[in-house]
Image 1 (tube, rainbow, N blue to C red):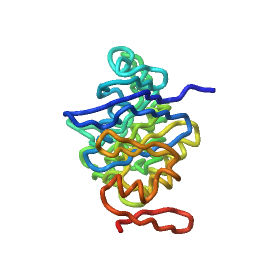
Image 2: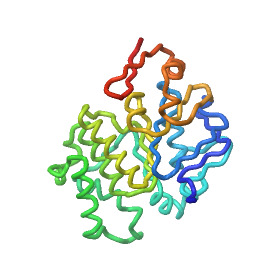
Image 3: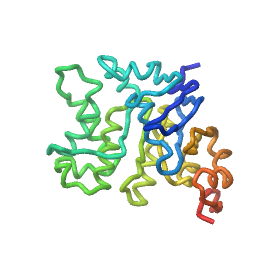
Image 4: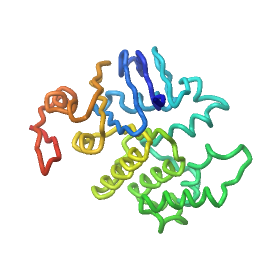
Length: 260
């Protein structure tokens, strides 16, 4: 049996005195798609940063693809970790002009040596990623001319070009219209079916239950609940999670949740 791509044992994380999770037991295996749900300020992004190796946990152990964190996220081992996990940040920064293709090619850097240039094969991988997010026609455009939704899809393309085994997505649907929200969720669902693992911070429990096999709820006080999306995502749990009563609506076998 293969080792999990992510394993947290008795993990406690906090930031600025705010406890995000306490004694979290969490395992993510290849082929799984996880949603992280919670209110604004519950610590979803901070937990994802911790898993990415960008924030140090208070207690407990954390392994990503066999790498112990946070030690693996620094120094020469960072390149090896970047070949295992890919991280989509909530906000994208473009201080310098570059084309969409050049930006997508950044995803290939973990696979290159220190002084290597991108090969034709690397460019083919980046070009294929741009096609997947419907940006092939924008390959030579300056990223600073892209709309918010186009820039978000480019960030997804860069992550696809990285080809990690574990995708860590912080609000991947930000700035996207409805059709592209569905397209991005379908895209990562295909990656999971192909053997990758996906962990995504989401705001819509309907998308979570539709596209994710598992879910982690963060209640904002250190308490958490994890398990199969079909059983964990209920009106009772969501009402507690968001502090507002919700009603479930079933449409053609899909489950959607609206304020009561």
